[in-house]
Image 1 (spheres, each protein chain N blue to C red):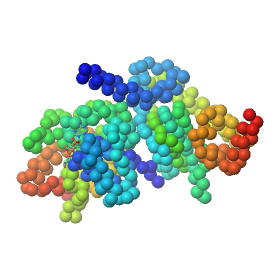
Image 2: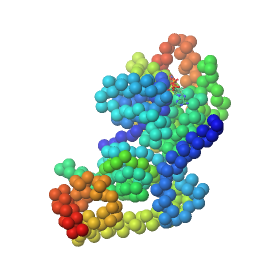
Image 3: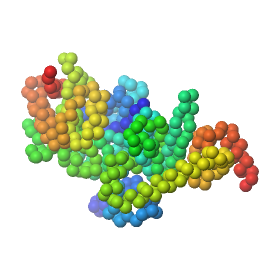
Image 4: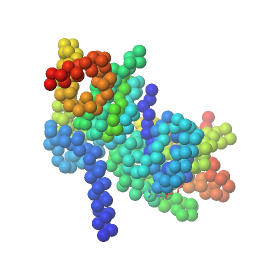
Length: 212
Length: 220
Ligand SMILES: NC(=O)c1ccc[n+]([C@@H]2O[C@H](COP(=O)([O-])OP(=O)(O)OC[C@H]3O[C@@H](n4cnc5c(N)ncnc54)[C@H](OP(=O)(O)O)[C@@H]3O)[C@@H](O)[C@H]2O)c1
């Protein structure tokens, strides 16, 4: 009986913490196939880290030591201008990566702040751990190459849309990428991301819903 | 502005755990307190807040959750309990700094229970192969934390470990607690450090240092 309970407890512990990598494994398996052993090995390169709402992963002036994979919750990156106004650069939800790539790769201090908009569960990768991982699991090279390609496409798309698209088109693109965004992100942050005032955003949303 | 680091203290209800917690709560760290004795933790928490209203501290009811949220984990438990703690935190301690403070003393305080070819720090590293174990705070008494400067001299606090960046981070922690950090070498140097404290304890008993005593290297 006693062993039964013990066994049960250790199984729940294992299940509980295996969930820490669930979304990552799901994402990886969409692009490349890993064996169970490789999955076990992959875990050892990531730092599991809980971040509470409003806590920072990175503050301006610090070197970005980590790339963060979001298992649960939401992060945002933003800059603050001379007038003290926040400009949101990116959001990251479950299954997305976040980090200041430039600072991460060059070791230069970051111009960005990254904080949690919700209680979050992250998997952090240092440059050193990334290098070791790519050496031990060469298949992951392909995963990161595809990831970088997608990132590049997204950045170019955003660049192009910021030059030519209307705020409404930009808003629709964002909601398409993440349908729960309007419920999870406060209006003023969405407006900041789109580069419009909260009033313009609210008018825009009214127009969209009227047309539906 | 430096991003704030979170430190989990496992065994915060003990002599060392509470001394470390009180002292680090005055530095810009977020401190997570885990211990088995709820009442002791609550009074510790009150004391921290009474001394420093702005202290960023919190009681966490589970060792694994506290460690999951932490950047640095301090194992402030007896050597005999480290295996048990390591089991609980292993998964969430991957890639993190784990500070080993223990001295594996025998029951009569006359020596160590570990064999001469290892140390409690190296044993903890074996239990947590994916963490960065650093030896620190083992050569200072709990009583030293409220008096890290004796007769105008700051007590030296030795640290040892195999990861240079982690040693640097732990040096900052040691300095924040008011001691003078000295990097003594690789993790295996913990064998010497643990024996040094064994000697200091014996001398403290013999000469009535009242457990406020420490090491200081005099040099030019
Ligand atoms: N005291 C010193 O001056 C000093 C100096 C240098 C290094 N150290 C080292 O620091 C460590 C702690 O010493 P201490 O003097 O602070 O001892 P202590 O006062 O007895 O505290 C030990 C703490 O560990 C907890 N603990 C014990 N077994 C545990 C387990 N299985 N799981 C979780 N928590 C457990 C205790 O909780 P409960 O009370 O609820 O059991 C208590 O909070 C030791 O390794 C010692 O060698 C001590």
